[in-house]
Image 1 (cartoon, rainbow over the protein chains, first blue to last red):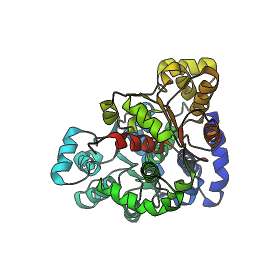
Image 2 (cartoon, chains in turn red, brown):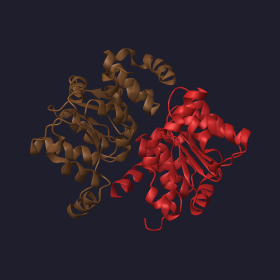
Image 3 (cartoon, rainbow over the protein chains, first blue to last red):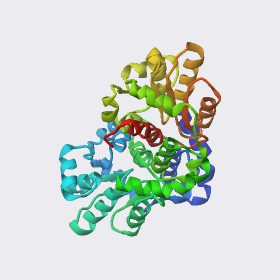
Image 4 (cartoon, chains in turn yellow, purple):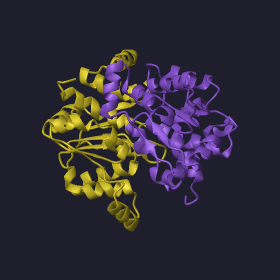
Amino acid sequence: MEIEKRSFEIIAPHLKNLNLNDDEKKIYSRMIHAAGDVEYAPIIKISSNAIEAAKNAIKNGCNIFTDVEMVRTGINKKTLKKFGGEVFCKVADDEIKKIAEHEGITRSMAAMRNFGKKLNNSIIAIGNAPTALFEVLRLIREENINPAVIVGIPVGFVGAADSKKSLVEQNKIPFITVEGTKGGSPIAVAAINAIIYMLDNSR
Amino acid sequence: MEIEKRSFEIIAPHLKNLNLNDDEKKIYSRMIHAAGDVEYAPIIKISSNAIEAAKNAIKNGCNIFTDVEMVRTGINKKTLKKFGGEVFCKVADDEIKKIAEHEGITRSMAAMRNFGKKLNNSIIAIGNAPTALFEVLRLIREENINPAVIVGIPVGFVGAADSKKSLVEQNKIPFITVEGTKGGSPIAVAAINAIIYMLDNSR
């Protein structure tokens, strides 16, 4: 906790010109801390309604669906559980592997498709696979799936930047993301945990 | 696999002037891919004997000890198991929590100290906590612990850069690291999995 506090003090000057409210500052600080990279400051994007929507969803006991096991591992499940929510990830399931092979799609994509209506009112946390984010955006557009918030922070040089651009350009679902190629599991986890901790009075 | 291949092609020009051998290129590519950040290229440091030492350790069935659960989650345990090795992490154990509180040290530090002699001939993978890396370096210096390789890539603004500088400056144990504040679980996982995959003929 001491280390976290000192780290946030070091990060603070880099947020000064971004005109953030207190909740946004907490999320930015935790994401920048998780990457060890202050160059995240100008590329983090949080839609105006995302934090409120995420807080309400968590308070209502929403579940969180992740693209990879590392994101599931990192989310503070013990604190989430106090509100009734759980974290699910299917990417390593044998059933999903079979579906993905049969349909010629990635496992992350098959896993999101397989969650289907369970994604309604949930928080979706993507920290690795652009194809998972593209699939979620398709489910919203074509199948009326209606998640509460998308934390969409896939990483890499093939599809990640484009998938995050599409997330920012859709104007239906509140989102937290990072522009460009950077991102990853700890960054998505940082955003989610920052919000969980805002609601946890024991911290 | 297709996405990975295209990603590595995009990364390749950024490695051109670094004079890397094929194994080094694989590790660099996977680490840069995991961060979505080509600026890792000049700050990744691999000691001359680290890859060979890690390959031999894995072939001999060595275990891998991690500082956090996210690193354990990300390592390809199924492939490692073919050689006889397993991955251990104690940071979330109740026993470690008690020791850390009693001794006034971080849990990551208590966990590494608690592994003790089990760290001999192992690979240590640190993707989060500078205190875990500092403790491992102390165990080597003061208690003759002798790991095969340290993949030491803690992240952040408090201690991470210093702990990694100490890792580079000790000249006993082979290492893979990243200079400065950047790093994190997926970067440590990427380095470890790159080496595991070099040994796996099924890939």
